[in-house]
Amino acid sequence: MMTRRRLLAGTATLTAMAGVAILARPAWATVEATEAAIGAFTGGKTPEPGRITLTAPEIAENGNSVPVTVEVDSPMTEGDYVASVTILADGNPNPEVATFHFTPLSGTAAATTRIRLAKTQNVVAIAKMSDGSTFSDRKEVKVTIGGCGG
Amino acid sequence: MATPKPRVKVPKKASAGEIITIKTLISHDMESGQRKGKDGNVIPRQIINKFTCEFNGMKVFECDLDPAVAANPYFEFNAKVPESGTFKFTWVDDDGSIYTDEQKIAVN
Image (tube, rainbow over all chains, first blue to last red; front, side, top):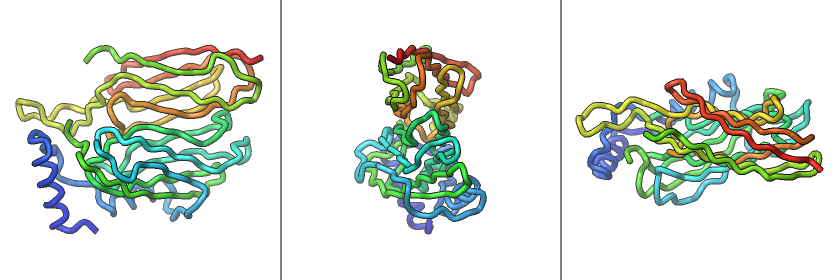
């Protein structure tokens, strides 16, 4: 839950952090916004745990560039493959980070990229299989310097 | 901003059906639309919003990017190589610009 106190504390940290890092939009992605984004991706279903592994550092020194890897356990054949994987962050101004789309030609459903995290928060990865089933994994990443300004 | 320069790493050779790892990087500020400039106005968003990788015209990997992807977007992913051919990489900018790169691979 995003309480007023946490919101204020977060905003104060961010403002102090870079001096120039004043947010254009005061509205932060909240846990609710993230849940809504999950629902939009899965079509209202609650993703099950398992099959997907999200790898992210426990502590990120610089929130401007945090390496994250997703791997999904799948045979990746024409009949059974991972269609897409989305990455969400519940403490960023917007929860959406990136969405990967795979095909059987991908060989394995694994991808690495670098993302921005404004503050310490949960990163969620959700996989959507070709048969419509969904799986998710989440990791908390502690951020020492946020990546909202730069 | 200088013209974004794509860099792609694909193995030169592979055996048929092998799963290879591809690494891509493109220089781009990924301006998030959240920051304010010196004049106090919001710097408009300008990011790469889509990346695709095709092999001989078939889709291999695609990514929709949001402003939370770090500057100089980096991707590492896999591809199954059934035959010799060409990988084509495409990055689509918010302003409509398209940046591409191609890499050949030989199957022996």
